[in-house]
Amino acid sequence: MDDLYNSLPSQIVMYTTDFCSDCRRAKGFFEEHQIPFLQVHIETDPRAVQFISEINHGYRSVPTIVFPDGSILVEPSPKDLEAKFS
Image (cartoon, rainbow, N blue to C red):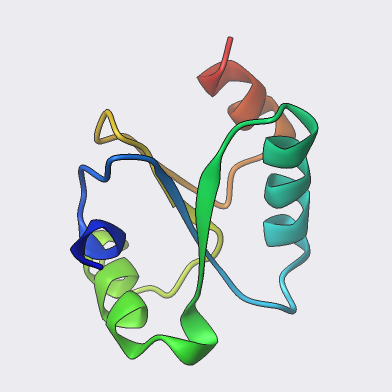
C-alpha cells in the first residue's frame, strides 16, 4: 500500500518497533482517544525503514508519526501528542 510510504497519507501512520516504549505510549494515546491510525513495524518492513530514514535525515527514529496534513512527529512526548489534537 503506497499510503504507508507517503508524506501525505490518507490517515495517520505510525512507524514503530515492538521494543520501543515511546511507541507503546503513542499507541496508547491513540487508542485512549479513539483516534484511528495505521501501525507499521519497521522490523518487518524494509520499505518502511527506507521511508522513515529519508524523512528523518538518515535516522530510524521511532515512533515516527505521519499525519494526513503532512506534519510529522518524531518521538513525541505526551504533551506533543496532546497539542497536536487540541
